[in-house]
Image (cartoon, rainbow, N blue to C red; front, side, top):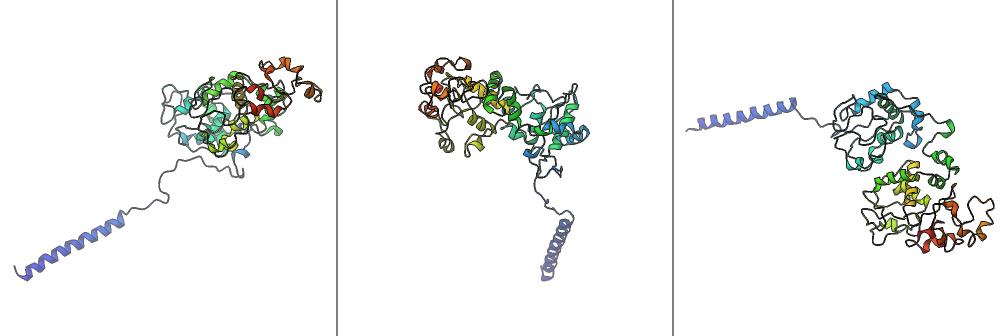
Length: 392
């Protein structure tokens, strides 16, 4: 084969390569891949375009009762379309990624038979989807039920939530009556609720009075939420958290051998009295920063009060909560209602110790070794005889 033939073969190969490269370049221009501006998919929270509600956090939001009075179900129906990928809204509709929501207002948590609810949701089956609970849930599902499998980020706009709730309520065979909007001065139902809720107990804002008047059976039902991590029976074992039998009046980090966080151990000089338990149950991480407890807290004032009333009764020697908010006033055994505060203190030690009958809750009252040194009695008996810690 002469050089002429070799040149022809080499030319053909080079030509083919040139054509291939050219086609590749043209195809790249026509079918090029363009990087998205934002990689990935967003799980949309309904937009917070409520504009003027400056700064809007939940703290600044009006009570749900007031927002519902102004809510527009038509706007709520439009907002509900964003939930349509995971929920059906028609009567008898099938479950999707989430359960059917027809007539949801007023139903129990985990209401839909056969739906695969998370364990965290199933643990709250005693609770009802009322307006307040739905408002909290829609705002922040994982904050309302820690451990839920719902991936939705929540609706941060208070008016948007109210519109959606108005639609959900209307989308029912028997819509619930809307709660009355509070008077102007009573606006923050949750924050100011201590005032309003404690009033029936004549406590005028006193949390202890609210606990004294609380429904113990309701508190026992609330305690079921805590059953996954705590035992409540006398001598019960620790689980993820310590046993809580007789907790009211005990010291922080009271259970021998339990692996408390360093943050909790650092507060072991403090006592689980009514006020401290109230703060802890509302927001554990705020009360003891650095705690390992993952529970988000109980935001309802009434639920916290009922739970503490149950925890107090679930004891060998319940603390005397008093009849009218004098929950910690047991040291003055001369009856909290006595008009003369100066007399009970000195007169209490012997004569009155025999008759705190008015407390009813304190059959173990005679076991008050030293009524006068109130605070001193508590530290001495952290686990053995909580009655001595009744003063606090």
